[in-house]
Length: 287
Ligand code: HEM
Image (cartoon, rainbow, N blue to C red; front, side, top):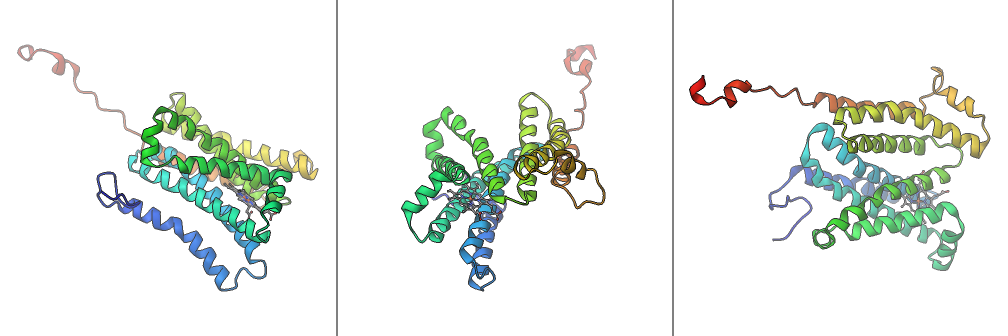
């Protein structure tokens, strides 16, 4: 039987998989459309590098969201799209790398030396190698072949995400709003997983993410500006509490964490109704 991305394991058509599969192509189609209509002129390739990089990191984080969302919403069918979204992150990162090669006039020696010499490119490249390893081992045959080792190998995704986020943060230079938001959302997901691993129910895991990730985001943002741009730490930190300031990354992260918490609370299992014990366990004659 031929397996297509929009079919379930039993061969049945899955509308969820079909919609997600089509959706993964939309950013690429939009980027190509903008380039073809001159909307990215005059720096078409540079713009395309930025947009493909952004979608690579977005899809990577979305693939990490699948499990927390599935556990919070109690919607196990979501697991079917995790692999697809992860492979899309690799595809966008590969397009990003190819466009960088085009931007460097196909001079592979120069590309290699830039990757070796510029720290943010080095970590981007290591992240890409990691994504390539995960994509190459994502087929059913490889999952079967690797057995228990597959799970261990795929925990690499967290390290890869950290490298991708660092690459994003370093190249952002003056304004780190979007990378800081992404880092905060990543923290929401990691805190969720950590709490779940320690036996917490989904709602408590979501609460941990929603409560702890926003202050950690504010600290990361203030620390970064202090270290790289020499802006006083307290000044950036205080901006988080200033109602006159535009929304800070911590506010977006709070919104994201709260949304996950709301899903977990709405889908929280009501206390299971206890069956009357006596009636159940007593021998029939005793009733
Ligand atoms: C394969 C090695 C990679 C190379 C050579 C590379 C190269 C670049 C370059 C040249 C830029 C633009 C920097 C600037 O304009 O100053 C960039 C930005 C970016 N890259 Fe990469 N990158 C690589 C891997 C990755 C990976 C694996 C990801 C994500 C998982 C990623 C995500 C991003 C993001 C999010 C941006 C910023 C986009 C924006 O703010 O508009 N890159 N990268």
